[in-house]
Length: 302
Image (cartoon, rainbow, N blue to C red):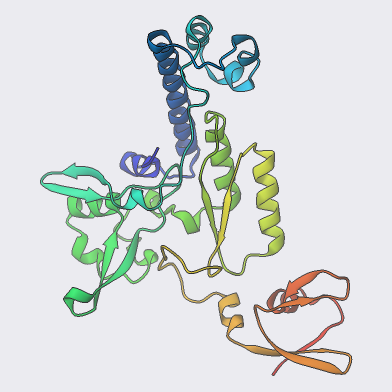
């Protein structure tokens, strides 16, 4: 599955709106229903899976709660051809190279990945063949809107996504870095009800996110019955995609500074993102220690 965020963009619906979440749930439910019905029809034609046993299969909560009575009856009669059917795989790379749709004589390349929101409205690319010039590449549904309205030249002058607010409808701005992470978990949880295997989904977080918030996100994911979730904190590894969202965060600026960490008569020089051991045995970065002002450590700017 790919392009669900683009579908919402084309319909003028914000990804994390109540209407958008409801529609995503309906799409996932429809995919599950058709998938299992087709598997039962294939079982009638080619035979059921050798390990299929209706007595135990019918006790599966997914079978009991998700599928329609008609599909359940078909499975009871024919069995299913497949042991499991549904998974939303990681499609971050291939989603960027497929032809999403055509408008007039123009093909638009790239769709949103899996059930994830659009990563960014645009990214900046450097072309060596054009004298190392930089140019903007807009997401496909954004570019299609700009082309239709004749706004491409005006949009190319934008330096950040906020600069596009005068020419793009609000629903476009619900991108990966702007959606509440707990809302992302809730959306994935709704879709997970209709997917018998796991869903690939990455929650994008700012670099200065508190460790406690990350812990709460994982706990929230467990409570929403997710089979898996990925957290990506900006700056934690070299990015495959980057966003032109904002300037440096407070944490990014802190990383470039040096601090003298003193305990008893000894002291060492540390960076803002270096890990230290607190008196209570817990670990912290210099940045988070200074921000929380806890403990009895002596840390001063060198």
